Length: 271
Image (cartoon, rainbow, N blue to C red):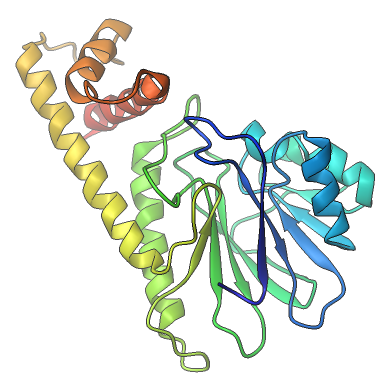
């Protein structure tokens, strides 16, 4: 869907990874070098495909989760390319990424956009090449289907909603650029198929989150809990809310639902 993006899907399907983590190989037309985004799991066959798509100049990571980062040391060893992430713990031979930074590699301009919420270190990447419409790599901040978890211990619903606002504004701004007019901004998520309209996807995500918050409020009202002075919700309260709000979800994703409910309860306690 984009001349600068090639997706290589890892063979790690599951409830949290959908059909598998998508690693991306980026290069401008005519460039020999490449940038890899999210090496994925520590799987020799997958890392071999990524290395063979090179020569790899640089490896970038969207966030700390192992299904995106476990392969980083192996790909660094295979290619010698520095690995850069917002979290220094996931850097190998490279410096940490910072929001607002612009990286130039493989003939591309890659802007780092800090989008905390799913995790504190989550970033999205705006990828531009001369004469082509920019695209956005969203990691797990916006998925190709379903919704993302507000992950413990550092996920934040307040930050996540702010990041959605930022991405919607960014997507509309990119689509309106005079030099490469486009009706919408194409996005490539860490899991699932590409999104033809990032702004529309973000609006749907926000509506879903606000609907869930209303359901959590209603669940709390139905439980008739005593006023605890805004203390952190207990595990019993969290499980009771999960049972009411997420009664219809597959049991395999209940741990993720619990994490998100805890984030929702903390958000409401801060309001």
